[in-house]
Length: 96
Image (cartoon, rainbow, N blue to C red; front, side, top):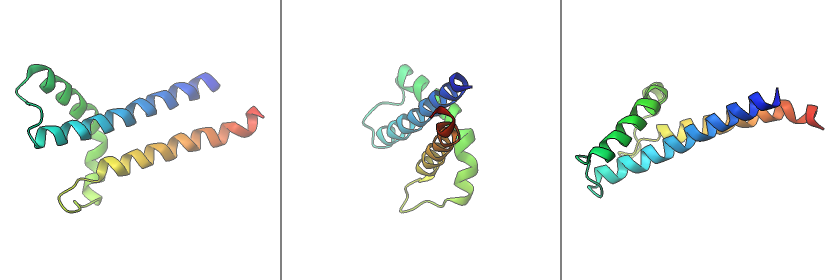
């Protein structure tokens, strides 16, 4: 059971990093720091959009923009951290 929980925890951790990188990449593209016409940049941003947008879309319905800033990645990251914590809270007593 422990290896399965570690795998789930690792996947959730990687998804959190994908959300962070996606947000930073979108800011860099919005301020023209990086060129979105570059093929590599486009491929990375498209991949990150495709894996993060399905989870962010429902949150955007409930969380409004605050000063033009999209807070849905922050909400999703907090939710994922909460889920990761719940996974280990249930397992921790059985490990001791």
